[in-house]
Image (spheres, rainbow, N blue to C red):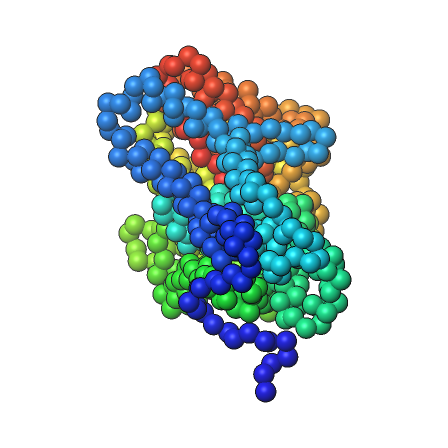
Length: 598
């Protein structure tokens, strides 16, 4: 006895032969290049794959070309300087909407998103013929042209959505763009697929309402049930990816992501296997799902093998620094990393409750030991406002002997220090516990001169340990090192922490101080001025960075902090790139930034 509603065989492939039983004129109309449902996978699915591969190919050529042409004389030509300045301007320029307190993605990212939007909607809506002629008495079958066009464009996007989501990322290997910076494209392509899924579903609903058989279809066709079961988790995942919702619920809804993905893919595979009857199972829709799962599962399998069998279980100790910053120390003999890299930690202490089911990204604030086999990974973590958040629960484990932890990584650019060593002057900007990102970079520099370090903190207690940490790192004295630490608020306890971003090190400007205070000591005078400045509100980072860029021709800028701080630094760098672009001067300003949230 067969399964209810399952009136078609579950098959991977078939002959693909499409037989038209209509008149010659009707068959000619149906077999048009843009209307032929039996060739929809080639016309729309392949076109989508070719577009995505072309975009990745362009960025891959640019990435590898910049590596191999670095030593060529053309690299210093005026034409190349302007091309490079334009590329960096597009990657830094953003727009701030004060009314919404929102910083846009970079101009280059938005242009690429607009190109994708135009392509997808031109391919789905451009050919016209959204419904078959003839209304309820149409002879061309149940599948609607707009429906199958949108379905195969969405299927073509699917493998790239999963590729963009992976931490071990094939696209990163080709383009050099880190996996965290690819997350914006992962979210946008997911939204594109969701909209296309709706464009696939609703024309079918409208068509059968016109045919007056929508109730019969719902009761007798399994595709309607599996379609709804696919759309519901897809809608949930898309809506939860919206920035404010994601930041508020991060860590609470992440436990649901894996079951929702499992439900979505199982029903997706089923609905594709018993799909529409337009081609007698000749379409290759199952191949898209197999390709998507192969791309994703290969990276997940590698990550699991590395985490559970190579890196294995470690034990961390927790302490609280002045200013209530949490310090996490993990001794390890199996792990090597580079400055500015990060890992995903899965903390397994029972008091963390559901957080043991999720992993969280943290930047490594130390370097591996060169002399001994064992190294200590150090993390500086700012507590979150919510008492149920991971960081707040972690702060309560300060007295615990050890916390079991699984380490996944390292991830991130491993060549930041080597790039910075090529520049005459280096500018570092950190907000809050973003200083943890900068400390190992400072320690790894070959030349600890021509440095300008700007740190923005919330409370004075944090400023003290940050100053001590910078002193420990900058062991070689130099008169060309300038350190400025701005304190914008007052001290607070862990329970009063006001950071509102998820499980992150995000800090906001705190209660302003009414006093300005500058500190100098004799030890610091040997390396130049070290200033701790308490002031009202955040300093004008745009002007500070622009001023630091005036007296040098080759400058490297590195920043880590909340998005508002990053926006100011990016704007300053974009202004410098625009100046290079207009004047064609032999000047270079390189920027690397790390946001607290992706």
